[in-house]
Amino acid sequence: MIVEMKTLFVAFFFILSGVVNAATGEYPLADVDIGQDEESLKRGAMIYYNLCRMCHNMKYIRYQHLAEIGFDEKEINDLRGDKLASTKFMSTASDENITELYGMVPPDLSVMAKARKKGPQYIYTLLTSYYEKSENIYDNRFFPNIKMPDIFGYSVTMNDAEKLAIENQAKDVTAYLLWASDPRAQERKTLGVYVIGYLFVLSLMFYFVMKRVWSRLDTH
Image (cartoon, rainbow, N blue to C red; front, side, top):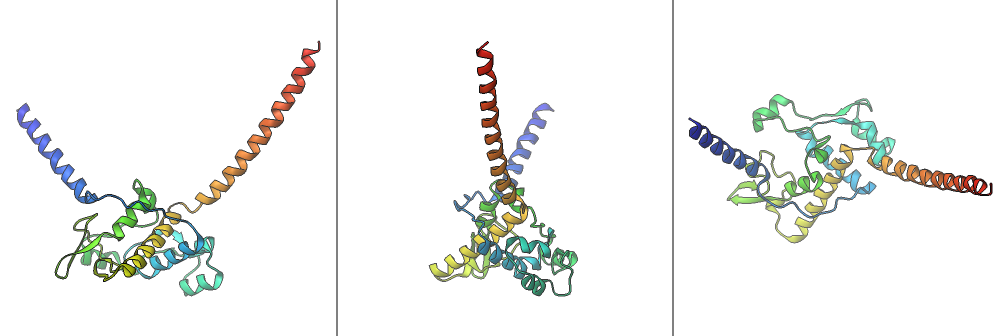
């Protein structure tokens, strides 16, 4: 009985390992730096708005948040239309229609860049790993059998210039998703610099006060 249980456990372990490997595609992450400059964030936001939003929600991001990455009031108003500025970014398709089409509800993208280890590299690699498996059949080397279609057409590009343009788009939308996963990151970094500077100055002041006090004690 014990031997049978061990056999079952080993079999389960290998099956589980196969599932995990299938999810990652056993494909190396791209060694790419994802910037956070304003223009890249704005381009990435528009890619999400025009392409990704057809299937994916971003329930923690609202139209008003776009002002934080450089959108002016007119640009935000043009995007939101008759929606309130406090309206969340939600998919344009219903969960029922998406499930019927793909067999599942696509994940919310609000914190996707933080949900996985090396999230930005994960997203970029996923978007740029599509290929033509056979005639008119497409797959993803990084995530085999993925339900998400090749939104950029990376698998059917004809030359290096087209691929480079798509790779830049993938960087932009990844930058936007990275910002969306932690919109206050830059603010915290800036505040951290001021706090460290303040503590440094305060430490120097305490040091000189201590030296002065001890110098008086040494004279008695």
